[in-house]
Amino acid sequence: MSQLRAKQSRTSRPTVDPQQAAGRVGPAPPTQSTTEVLELTSTLQTTLEVDKLIELFAREVRRHIEVDGVAYDDPDGHAHIKVGEQALHRASYDIVVDGDALGELRLYRVHPFTTDELTQFENLLCALVYPLRNALSYRLAVERALRDPLTGALNRAALEEALQREVEVARRQGTPLGVLFVDIDHFKQVNDTYGHRFGDDVLRAVAHAVSDTIRRSDALYRYGGEEFVVLASHTQPIGAQQLGERIRGNVAAIGMVGGHDLKITVSVGVAGLRHGETGDAVLKRADAALYRAKEAGRNRVESGDFEATGRC
Image (cartoon, rainbow, N blue to C red; front, side, top):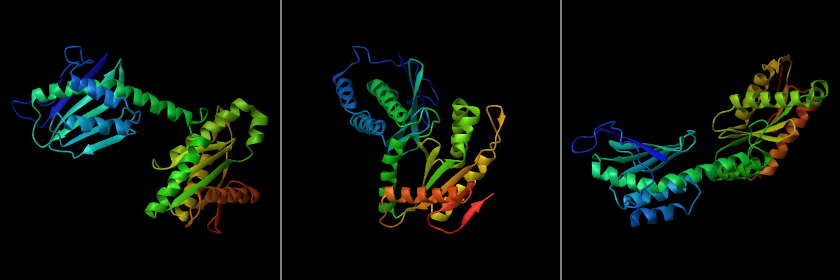
């Protein structure tokens, strides 16, 4: 059963009182399944992309109710989709299906919504509930397919797609892009000494340390084995090198894994995207810088753009 909890703020009579709960609104029963709702359901079932779904829904709502804007926040806080403009008055709906939160949907308008308008909107909203759940489930399945199940980092397939996209964005907008190759030093010795299960714990600990170091706009990928890649958008080469130093320092500070005192270090190779360079080319330069860091003694950062190095 679906549940829509409605709240409206900045209203005056004869509209719904501020913060008034609208109670439960389930899928439209036969008497409410008007042609409009059925047509909307059919339209919304044409996509599994959450952003496109909300855009379609907003467009259809505007055919029936005067609104200045529609906004949607997903339950994980990852997607914030806005269609139109925010305004003084709003009606907010928390969407819950079978106990699962599907996010919050908001309507905005310069003047208050009437009770009849909200009732009409709730009938239309019934057409969104299950397509939205399907779209969120599809997005989760895609995300899981692009994540390394051991470390939680994105996987190599995700890297190949993201690197091409980030390079295209950097070219189009004229913004910098930093690429970092991170490799756990002497990882084979860890596996040989403590076993592969403990080695898995080390991989997770390092991935967690790197994830805590990078910005939310950056992304961490497991390239293979004990190697990771970080894509740092809007980051100049010097900034990428500084990020590499922070990663190296934070990994060295782990100290204990699985109840064992263990000194973990990483070597980092850094490269900044050059004019006209492909994604593969900048990745190879970062990999070459990583190789130099290994050859120079490990636990250090080497840059494909500068001669300077760092080590502790």
